Image (tube, rainbow, N blue to C red; front, side, top):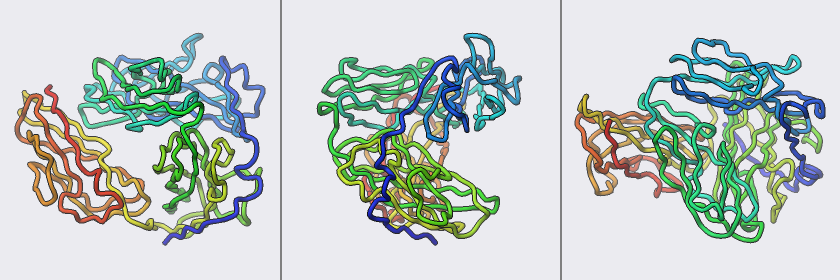
Length: 445
């Protein structure tokens, strides 16, 4: 059971004050300028091939949500240096090395404060493919957007590889890219960008730079909330943020209070918060917030989108919502099953073809069971009711969740086109039925 209730008008002060500027620094020199209450490592989860290196960064956060670079100031620790080592040497602080296959946890410690741990998987699997998220971008001149690169490996594993890939722009006069995937809009026009790593290239995505400093009007709203709490006291909330305007919203905060005694006021520190990196015009994005409660059962939540007023909006009256939750609660409205990844390769030696299909429920409403089919070596888009050469049944898919599917076809093809279809027998009533298919040119190994 869950309930979503609009709260209007907007609380005085919340989302209406001056933006809380972030401090950035190198060498940890700015650490004394703020009182550090927490430390984050980026990337916080990654896959590293044996023998390769990745630069980690440690960021200190203050109660005012300002930040400082602590990469050179913290003590880096690995719980398994035989799997992944991390350097504290001068000029190499935070440099992670993949030593042997396995999993290791990395933490950064500063003045007795230990960071949220980062999880590192070291693998000897081959890199299979790369993809960029979001799949297309509209951005205003002078604005910046954080992009993400995902790597998929031959064993089916996938991870954020934004700091490991090389970011490449088709026209530096339109956009430039920093290592890590920060895109900056330099001039009006359209271009494409892609990433490359270890000889593997992603499909390009299209980027359009519009306007003279703004991509249009933005109006952010909390469209829905799905939240659950387990017996250990861990509470997770998936907040669906909708951009009702024709402009781009990037890099803003979503805050959550758990069981507040009264309506939170400006200056009250939230129980959980997360940054939303990008919501395109007329689009939605799902933000995950995690906090702790007294246990399972029903809890009341208060949520604020763009809590530090980083985004100029046409309306500030729809940025808050109340919601409540109980264990296993479901969202409202229709689910939307989206093909978020499709790829694979033919193993000529084993004479089989591996296919990977990632299905994401991009709303907060739970989905009933459905089939996912793969159609091997065909150039025709499949239709509803067509049984694939291989298929699997997904029993259910909760709001905001992703199902990672591997299908194996007995046979190979080199450079052929294959298709996949989600909900092939139309069992799920979806808010959008046009994003359930995709094709892929099969590579060989």
